[in-house]
Amino acid sequence: MDHYLDIKLMEDPEFSAPILMNALFSKLHRALVDVSQGDIGISFPAMSSKCLGQHLRIHGSRAALERLEQLTWRKGLSDYAQVSDILVVPNTSQHCLVSRVHAQSNLESLRRRAMKRRSISYEEACLQIPEDLSKQLDFPFVQIKSQSTHQLFRLFIKQSLSPPLQAESAFSKYGLSNTATVPWF
Image 1 (cartoon, one colour):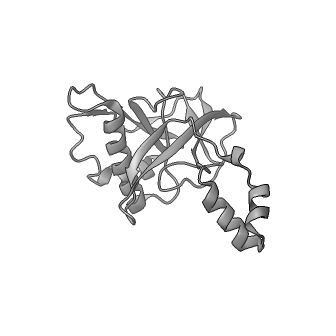
Image 2 (image 1 turned 180 degrees about the vertical axis):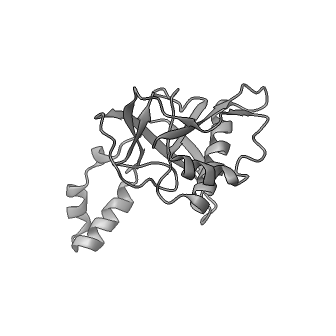
Image 3 (image 1 turned 30 degrees about the vertical axis):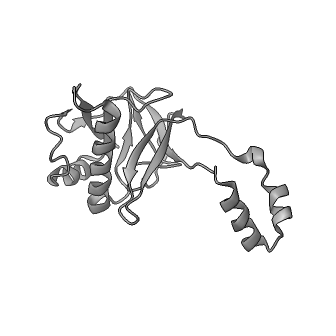
């Protein structure tokens, strides 16, 4: 994680920033499926409590980022984004954990799963999984289309500063991880 690439979305009268970020994130995900070996992570330097912002930072080794850039994954976005060269991470950086947050709002599905796995009755499942367990997520998200089911879904993202030591772990094909961190600057 000693190099990075910045992508900043430009203002556009036709498309809102979230729509452009959805398109950028979808293209990045498809590219990571092709080239990532769990060695490329992302962060959102301009993220707020409600939106991801207009700035996506891609982290990795120089070799990993060069592999990514050899693909034409940003095709069609050149009019909407400014892209930096591959740059060296500054020495005075903290680390940040950027992870996916799963919604557990479908109580009936959770109860059916509990009934099947634990061989319990519906009433027991209702006691174990009460109504107040359902929660609406209040995190920024990207809305992308599943390549397998072709359905739109929201991928909620949580970003938090972590201890200054970088955790060495693998990143998902979304560039996210529950344990690996990226430099924060």
